[in-house]
Length: 129
Ligand SMILES: [Zn+2]
Image 1 (cartoon, helix red, strand yellow):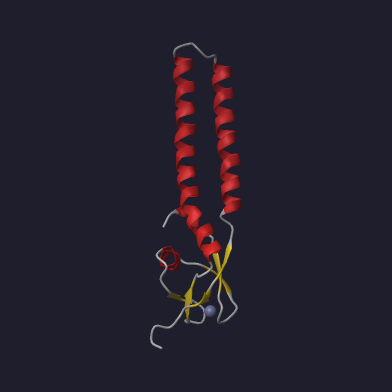
Image 2: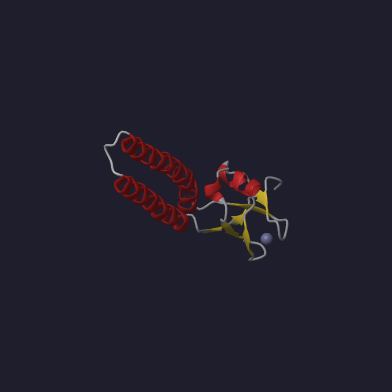
């Protein structure tokens, strides 16, 4: 599981607890497997298609963050090289770098807001019945 899924909460249908989901629980959700609540040890599952979609979109969010980082690094490198080649002044190079870093943090903030969620978990269907 990627870092993007850290900090996701789950609401347990059995004990009405809201708990921070652990990586193994997020893994289970990702592969649509039931897992136990870490508070009451009863079986849970994410069944709501809307929430599953939202959960899955976190992966693309992580991808977006990764590619954004590459883009910002490239912009910084290009600005530095242009400065070395005397095509850019030191002040211009600093400006370009600052704008790139600024854009990166704005996007990161937006991504962090998007990944703040509480999943409403339902009781898993028992296969023993
Ligand atoms: Zn529970």
